Amino acid sequence: MPTFAGMNPDPRQISIHDFTYPLPAERIAPEPLPDRAASRLLVSRDGVISDKTFRDLPGELPADSLLIFNDTRVVRARLLARRPTGGQVELFCLEPVAPHRSLELALQQTGSCTWRCLIGNGRRWKAGPVRLEFATADGQAATLHAERQTQEAGTALIAFRWTPAELPFAEVLRAAGHLPLPPYIDRPDTAADAVRYQTVYAAAEGAVAAPTAGLHFTSEILAELQEKGIQTGHITLHVGAGTFQPVKADRMADHPMHTEPILVTAALLRQLLAHRPRPVLAVGTTSLRTLETLYWLGAGLLLQPNATAPGSSELLVTQWQPYDMAPEATQISPEEALTALLRYLEALGTDTLEASTRLLIAPGYRFRLVDGLITNFHQPESTLLLLVAALLGTGWRAVYEHALRHGYRFLSYGDSSLLLPGSEQILAAED
Image (cartoon, rainbow, N blue to C red; front, side, top):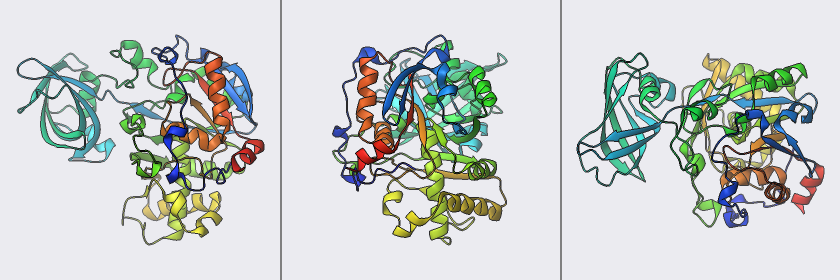
């Protein structure tokens, strides 16, 4: 497993300003390519960089690889409502608050609910509800009312109610909402985005941002992977708006990581166990964070079994947990951690692990379950770039400089990379 502990033994002391690069605005892809698989693919294998297209991916993967995809589906979380005076207010639904905090239950809620939201153009929204009229999927007239309850930390609690009341909130969002394109794509969403800002394997509704590494995959490429004997598996991490949260602190110790919910089946845990020690590749940073979170959840169960007894508390990996856990945690094997999670689910009488993660992966992190990554090119001074640097060591700069010199498209609708760190990168990172 890649380990770069020597590069920076305490990621809290990292300055995000050391992880930047010049990104001209014209290199940010504003639109997807007409063909998903036509995107370019930068391959970094053992520090050697080559240029491919995404259609070449199946032939570039290590033999006997297991690819893990994030099957979350983006919800139409932006609502454009009107004040009584006619002015527009934008409500960006971030997370449910009442009557359910569970995303799955909240999306099935009928009649009314409360969500934490970001508010755009809300300075003139003094009091009272705003209103949005829309048509349901079957053409029925419908109305959504939204009222601000409390304001805190740049967000607000918004109480929604709607008619017809029997509509689940998921249907309200589908009919009345807009796709939440990233803030650096400064244009309204279109009918094309409704298709292209989703992966072809998206299944579980709940994300407010796409797991963009997966946007390049087509059904044909997935079929070719199967033909070549490349195994695949699915996890769910519902990507939150925090993925775009800029790092404003001088030191990472002062940057709070956002929390995101994950769901992983017992079948996937067993698949990971059976596959080891063959290569596991994450499709996207969200899949990688979920896989590494699994290790720390299992290690936590082994080290503090009473703290996370079934029904006692939520399973959560905190931002600095891997760096703070007792030294004996480093002796727990991935197999032991995965087995502990399976035993936990068996004791709970369920086949699905529900947990949350605030895990920050930065240089100094030791990877436990992941051997490589398929990902797009990320913003300067972002936690996603820190994750890439943790995987590649100082080699991340060569990858990004190559991509800039050779005309790659950046960010969500941009090109892709296959990152396979080798022993030389590990040694360079530890010097």
